[in-house]
Amino acid sequence: MTWRVRTATAADEDFDVIVLWTEAAFSAAQAEEYAARLSAAIAELCEGPASLRAKPIKGPHPNLVTVRVARRRRKSSHLFLCQVRKDEKLILVLRILHERMDVRRHIPDRIED
Image 1 (cartoon, rainbow, N blue to C red):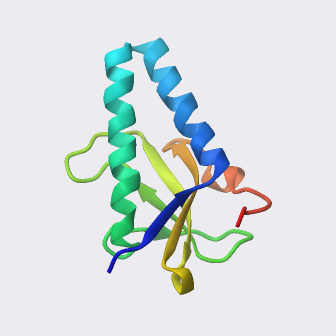
Image 2 (cartoon, one colour):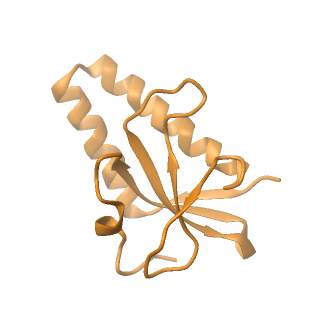
């Protein structure tokens, strides 16, 4: 069962910031590799929340979950904050956060459609 995956504007901005920081801290090659790793993890979200071991979290919006990027021998210090819309078979990536961040602080007040 294939799900559709969409990234919110904030998640796209998070992606760019993570890649730029990786390039500044390490190298352009490392940033390119990490961008590919994040992109592959986003693409894998089409497998659906159950197969990804999505963890439900409480928040002001229904069906919020976190999904770790570090899976399938993929190293990462990040996770995706998503909203699962079962009726639409859609996973909306709201944010890409470092694993040490307080996820609840980064839940958006409003979720784009």
